[in-house]
Image: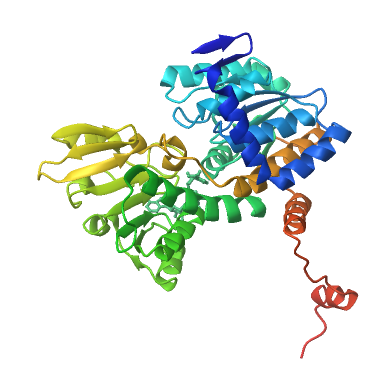
Length: 423
Ligand SMILES: NC(=O)c1ccc[n+]([C@@H]2O[C@H](COP(=O)([O-])OP(=O)(O)OC[C@H]3O[C@@H](n4cnc5c(N)ncnc54)[C@H](O)[C@@H]3O)[C@@H](O)[C@H]2O)c1
């Protein structure tokens, strides 16, 4: 490990590779660069400290550079023990960023790094999964005095924040960045689909066409994944617990059934629910020989890996990303990335395409600016990202693509806001 006063990363020698990859990501994140240009002039974050726990990827590095351009002091760690791209972490350290994280952290190291970020006493936190906020609320409440707002990137983190608000335990304002339209309709729906299929191919190189894929959870991520998988010639089966989502999957043309049935048919299983034990001990023994199992949900709770370890007769590492478990009946199951968020945790996973992340991270940058502008005015509840920010991001993105759209005429605006005019 390479360590300095303000960083701890795996190997500083990887910095040049990381720098090149960050610059490659920048070529595909033009709206974040546009925001950075304005931030450089206006310095809206000057004098404020931002503590981040996000997957340390090349795209996140572009966000870090943008926040620093806006005047912020930034300290960052990862939000998953396996997802840090070590070359990117090294490049950030070389640029003077306060960065603490490496691929393959133990649980203790993970929380030590979370606390290294909290040592900077952030005014704003940016979480992906709510770990900074939880640590502050449970162990470091003094930090709440200074905390202006916490921004949350993903569905699972928002579920945790909403639970805190419901229980009267949320002691700081929070913003639900995940539910911005320009976030979940692109990142969750498109990004998760593409990067999940990509990681299946990179880690196993199987032919997707003709294979049955069981997608658990038909939310924003799962519905996008089922659609893209079908586009690759796969045969999707959906499992759900929500009647409306299940009906939607049926009418989108998929087979829907409980996991105990689907378990028998799948060649590939992907969990993406935000819930726990979707695939558990009841199911492993029903699966076909060489079934591939992976998780794209946030936490490693979706597949009961502990249960799998208990009932497997034998365990063999195929490579860094693939573990083979032999069941009592002789069937071999292939678990990817230890059941952690596979598109980011597998050593061969690269996460979402940069272009998609530029939408998500434009929301983060503008939400940080919004929170600072509204310092002292926000209550201890979970706020949605204002529509103006969503619209601004979509407008910027269409502008970058050179696409114009129609504008509502005065007559149309009047019609849409009136109730008197009928047939
Ligand atoms: N891999 C990534 O890069 C990535 C990106 C975005 C979000 N996520 C994560 O993916 C997960 C899903 O996010 P989303 O935005 O699709 O959420 P969502 O709320 O839109 O969808 C989740 C779906 O799972 C269903 N579900 C819950 N329990 C289930 C069970 N036992 N069996 C089957 N279905 C069940 C729910 O009914 C819901 O329809 C979250 O953990 C989120 O944080 C991952």
